[in-house]
Amino acid sequence: MPVSSIAQQVQSLREDAQKALESANSLEELNVFSTKFIGKKSPIQAIFKELKNFSAEEKKELGPLINTLRDEVQLSFETKKEQMTQAELNEKLKQDWIDVTKEYPTKQGSQHPISRIQKIVEDVFTSMGFMIADGPELETEWNNFDALNIPPTHPARDMQDTFFVSTGEVDTNKNSVLRTHTSNLQIRSLKEHGAPLRVIAPGRVFRNEALDATHDAIFYQVEGVVVDKGISLAHLKGVIEVMLNKIFGKKIKMRIRPGYFPFVEPGLEIDIWWEYKDKKGETQGKWLEFMGAGMMHPNVLKNCGIDSTEYSGFAFGFGLTRLAMMKYGIEDIRLLFDQKKEFLEQF
Ligand code: FA5
Image (cartoon, rainbow, N blue to C red; front, side):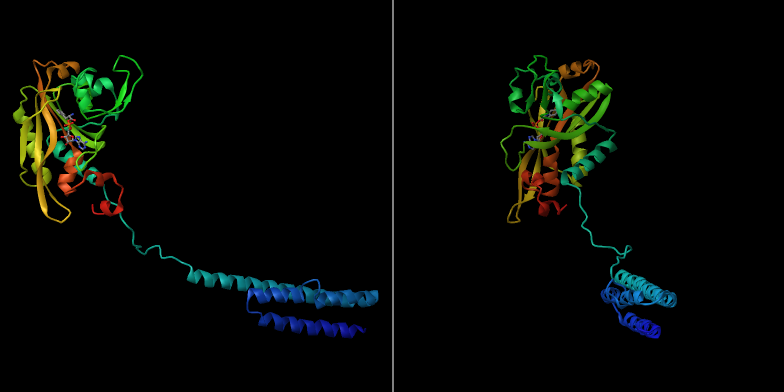
């Protein structure tokens, strides 16, 4: 084969490659091009193989021709591939984007009715100069019962059955209970701060209860204690009236009855008139037991190191869960902790 024919082949291959590259419009077509013009079976490689039939002199002339063609084709291919990849990416970016400044619809959560009412109660009491205390849910048997004038053999323990974590020791300071009321905070607060004192303590309590629309086994109470010189039941009545009127924004009907709690003397129960809508949407009303209260027993003051001849005090404990039911018109206590979205979304 003459040298001129190889030179012609190189030239026509150059033109073919140029045309094929120009007409490749996608990365896939470019890959086809690369197999055809750059791969091992390409015509350029075939011409390389032909070289062995030429003399050394001829090879010197033809070699650079073919090398140049191969390098040109390779470079043009890579340049076009780079351009196409970039163009594809730009196209993708035009479609795949998010507007970070746009406001997307989000569902905002809301506070649970118990948390809401607790905040309201805390605001009312702090405005009357009360401090807010917190205490453990797992309490010593002594703080939950004995210190409140309820020794192990006292029948009042039966009214508040709960879980005992007993070590088998006789010393009730060494055994624990899931607290049955927030009255353990009477003991803790007085021991910590002494007299005079004005404190409330909201918290969760646990009892072995038969469940119904107004009784749960885990519920919330708020304890209140005022100890000072010359404190009487009149102060208690005044504080409760202020609290209820502020929370409901109107005068609330309440009734006071005698009640028995070993840690107060005299002891009272306060009921409030609860109006709610029944399932038919009709307004119903009934007296609901709302709180236990009374003048603090001298033994309790003594157990906390307070001189009961100098100081007197009142204490009360009300159902925060019941207050939430009254405030928000919830007819069944069990709805509060059923975890139903439809119910909670209303608040
Ligand atoms: C007590 O727990 C006393 N510690 C209250 C007290 C404090 C009396 C200070 C004197 C001085 P009682 O068991 O009655 O009392 O509960 C108080 C309030 O908690 C009740 O009036 C009621 O509102 C609420 N309550 C009681 N049991 C339940 C229950 N199972 N579910 C929901 N709320 C309840």
